[in-house]
Amino acid sequence: MKKTLLIVDDEPSIGLILEYYFSKEYDVVVKPNGQAAMSWLEEGHLADGIVADLEMPFMDGLEFIKQLRASTLYKDIPLVMLSGKDETSNKIMCLKQGADDYMVKPFNPEELDIRIKNMLKRIKI
Image (tube, rainbow, N blue to C red):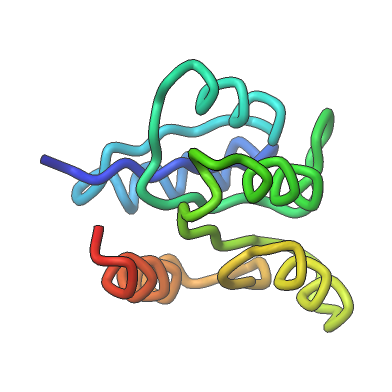
């Protein structure tokens, strides 16, 4: 059975690229913002890993991290944040809130894939 990867990004092109790249190995679910992603999770769906954008409408990446990590059901899901901002302060903010990793856009999907696989190996999902 395929693992489920939740992609949370308001840029349709990023969602399409990641869905195309990862769909061979994962069941990929794409949501346009943190609010839609939390609603999807709260409906009873589970993700083995999450890739989320930092800057989104309705619920940004930081608020998404806070809500995800505050939940007993979702707090351990591996989370990689994506952002067009390369400032160290953004990286530190995300990591302090509970993100497992942070990558700057544009990124190489193969590198993201390796980072996700390494996280999943560590938690043995």
